[in-house]
Image 1 (cartoon, rainbow, N blue to C red):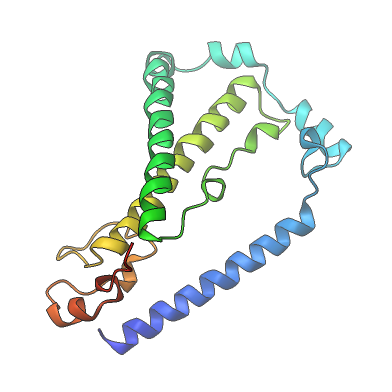
Image 2 (spheres, one colour):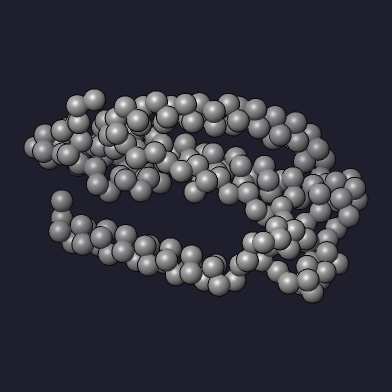
Length: 191
């Protein structure tokens, strides 16, 4: 692999780590979580937020027709998403333990906190819970799949992929048989 590409990837990874650290420290300064109803904000701010909240029933009644028609399809997806959640729990609980692969922390991906915002009405809060759960489960699934791929077949595709996962940069190049034979994934631990 081109040494400039390797250097840039290492630099990007280092910058992403620094950014995460800075974001985490800034969040820690701004947040205190003893009272979840007033999470992040003082009483005056919460009252200002409440004053800006739209009433739920007029909000729902004024949604476009397409939102009402699509609602059963959108919310019906909670069942397959919850089933996927259960399957992922079992899959990594069994397979990752057997392979000695680090398990993925679900809480790092499924983040549900926007429903604490006082300027959201009941329907908006429900939507925020749904989106936090659904997007979190899909991100959680992607990370589990990425670690599985990293363990079994860390070879890049011949074609460019739209959004490679975080482990993809460490995969061997398509067609590089020598690098594949030397890749650490080829030396599986005895289970």
